[in-house]
Image (cartoon, rainbow, N blue to C red; front, side, top):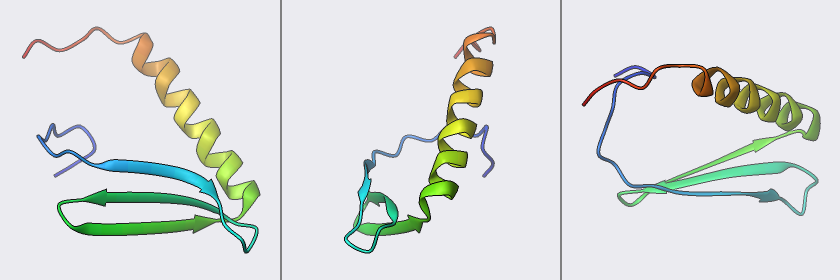
Length: 65
């Protein structure tokens, strides 16, 4: 499975600060919990990557299903 492979999986995503001064991205799906903690500067870089991907996606022609 790659980043461009579509899946029918529902997941919950939460993002917020921790009491240790980190930024947590928390994913829960099918009973699996994945907490990922990042330093604030790393979280800023992730946010920039998400924004860049969203901007690229806006310029793409949607695939037919």
